[in-house]
Image (cartoon, rainbow, N blue to C red):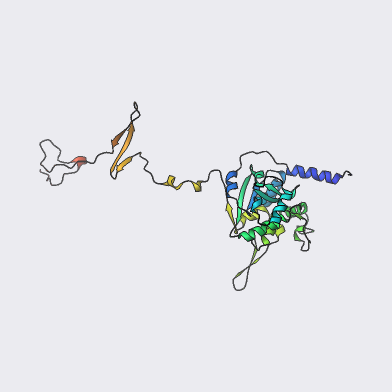
Length: 320
């Protein structure tokens, strides 16, 4: 095969762009919880660590640089033909949790979810999507297996989103080709947006107010979608899986327990246990006793005419 300098240079650039940087800090999510919470047809957002991920984050002003569709395990797919197609592109453990994604240098492929164990992830779940439509969304995405990554669309999207541009942003842009024919290339978020659009599920539709005050929804150009749109969409539930989830701490730890260390045998019969230093045994120390009532008698010589705490006993008259 003849040496192709352009192809060689392209592979070098792609490898340089997709090489992941080492970790500088642990991911913000608990991957084991992600594996437990995720459901088929959930969109997984990834905070990537490669150079191209950094470029995407800068352009989109979002921490999310990549999106993938969770399809579950092989047996979660109802259609046997689609299961066979998955196995033709994936030869790993059939019980592995899988995602379908379009990635630079790899194209559209099926990969294990564990690929992102060391990355910060977020789950975006389509609200109210039926199982039947979820299968159709996954079917649409699986039909793109083997497609190349659309690098030109990525560059056109960067030119469109970048705040400054030397040439008009729409000039010769693949984003606005209305008769592009059957696509043979795809970008991660555009493919997923098109898959949901195929079942009329909204991601970020254009809203148009009619004269009678009602709202009409118009599908948005799927080539303009980025990973952040799934996070921003009001039609997706956001599921976060932090290492420490204060919202799920046991409610009994929030009860108003006494902080003085008292223990009660019954109502009004409380004590503070004291540990004997020699034996380690506990001894009951009663709470301060209630004052005993004074006897209803005349005070003797030299005695204070007032009762405890300076309160005059009832039924005793003061004499001058």
